[in-house]
Length: 219
Image 1 (cartoon, helix red, strand yellow):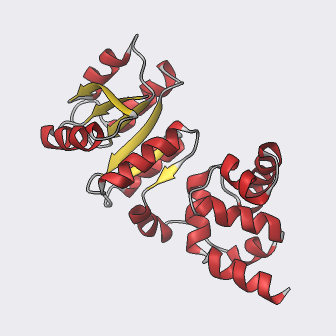
Image 2 (cartoon, rainbow, N blue to C red):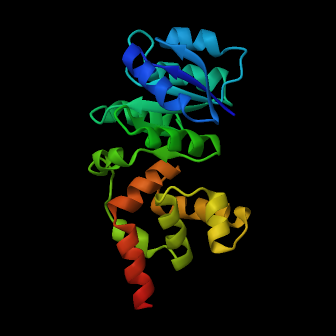
Image 3 (tube, rainbow, N blue to C red):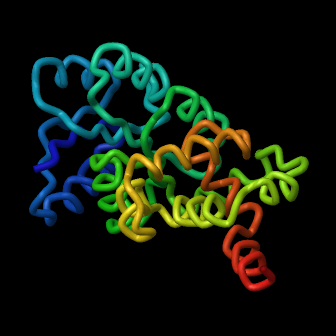
């Protein structure tokens, strides 16, 4: 069972999320809060796995709340609830290592997928958000960066962009999870990113699937 806290200052949003999650047998809502201050008080001393956190609450906003959660409750993973226009705040959340980013208006399947992916140790970014980041990513010399990857590294980057975790990639490529983890570290270093979210944005922005297919078929 995945224990979830919801923090949003709009009652209708909280009610909508509660309704979506109540239909899932493995998801359990243990806290609902209308402010960052209230959330911090309520999650202390109880078992919470995932926080769905509105990035733009009144009072203690999502960014400040995220900072406190990271300092006080390191084991809790945070999924940011946002709207597309809040790119600056989303980047702040990325710098604080939030685990997921989901649009408030996303379908229920997007939200539940995000929760399960993050709970399993992965990172998640709503597909609808990726395009809004593309123009903000520094892509100077990206062709050379892709060229620097081996075929195996390129394949792993492709699978990362498809949302697969290290364990899933390892099973798919018949390699150990530790080997995949080492590959991922090398890939991130080569393309100049620090996490799977930025790697996904980079890969999609540079047409990773088309590039990979072209590379494979011309070798």
